[in-house]
Amino acid sequence: MQVFKSVDGARSLKSIAATASSARVLDLHSIAAENPEDPDYLEQPLFIHPVLNRSIIVKHNVYAEEGDKLAPRRFTATKVIFPFDKADLNLGGQYLIVDQTDFIGLLTRHLDYTDRPLDRDLAVLRSVDRLPTLDPFLVREILNQQRIEVGRCYYQFSKADKAEMLHFVAGEIEALIRMCFGEMKANEKRTQRLSQLLLADQESPELEPLREAFGMAAEEFSEAMFSWKAFLYYRWRTRTLGPMLKATLRSISMVRSRRYERNDLSFVIRAKLILEKTITTSWREVGHSLRLYDRAFASLTEKESSENFRSFLTHSSSLFVELGERIGRLEQAVSFWNHRLGGERVSDLPPEELLDGMRDLLQALTIRVEERSAA
Image (cartoon, rainbow, N blue to C red; front, top):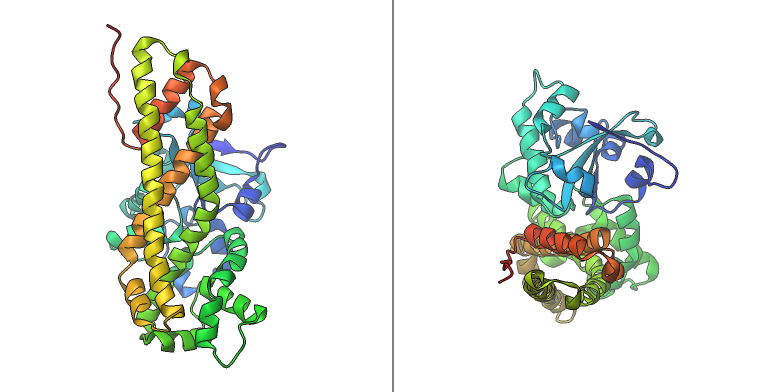
């Protein structure tokens, strides 16, 4: 197991826990500190082993020197970090990468599973490893598919994400405020309060007017709020993803064919076209899913009819899972292109390094491009 150190010029473990996005980091260390006596936390843990259940899990861009530990080669991996001191994250910790060489041996040498079910924790680790991101909606759905029950406290936004989302959500729901609280003005205070309630980890009695407007029982309403929160979260993420995708497509277009020998040229041309098509098609599908949400929400706020929106939220779990996975894959592609291929500095890379990077990205996106030998 390797050491994660806090050093000058690098992000410390403490800063990762405090500022990282929900899509990149699952901060079980903070969840443990905030919910030590919560029955939901204690009776339905994400991981059975208590040390693993206090780790910090990170979606990680694989460095070149780490590639030999992973087979097949990948451009992202899931890193599990065990803090040295739960009271002082600045001291760093030890980490391993899910399914690296001798993964199970490393894990069981670090953690004693003599009287605990190792298979269950491995199933959870490998499930989240298959996901493009660690956002709470995808994590819950993949665990539900395997009938693994986990306390609700594990499915929450990071504090950094929640703080940034508040203003965005407030702008989205002003019309809803007027509908549900007609006798009260949709002022800034009321809008902010409902935004906080929608993003909270638990439903509040203050949402009762909304539940009544939807005509839902308590359990059905809870699931609908989870789905709604997912769509708000994904729409928020697309605000920054759109400009990043444009920059990535611009960088791909800067790959110059004249720099390559004939046996590599056809691959470069086809790889560029396929990457551009894959990115634009996926982005178009993201837009289509969000338009379905917009139409359903408009029927609620403009026509003041809850039926369509209620039906949409009740039956939308498969749609938001597809949406989350598409957004996650696009974010992975952007992150890889910038991390490995230098973004707009791509034209300065040696041709062979760029070829390797394009091959790895296509492989990670499960796209195969035949390479032709020189005649």
